[in-house]
Length: 115
Image (cartoon, rainbow, N blue to C red; front, side):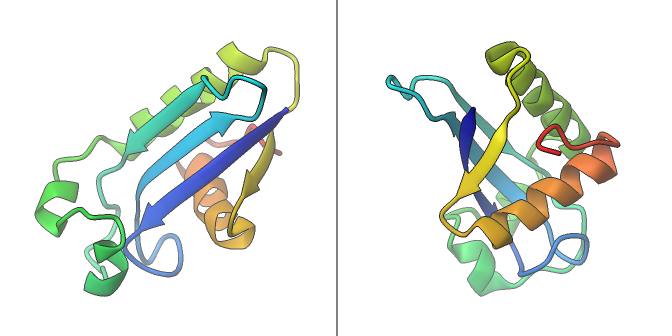
């Protein structure tokens, strides 16, 4: 089952910079199963131009949710909506979005449900 993703970050690579938000939708006829998370930065580094794309200020992102909690909630959402079906990650910029989701899942959850 395809899950379309879009992430926003404050820089070009995970770990050195932070994923600050992401959205997901299960690709089916209704497109009514969605998830949205806002994540507190994991680094003191950030690029103002990169963050500006999200529409959030640095100060706003500092009040976002704990990344570990968000990733656990996202994993649970995937399990609740897909059951035994394997999630398949797709994105408009697959390489960019994947690197952040993969890193955050492995770092904060210890596994990636996308494989």
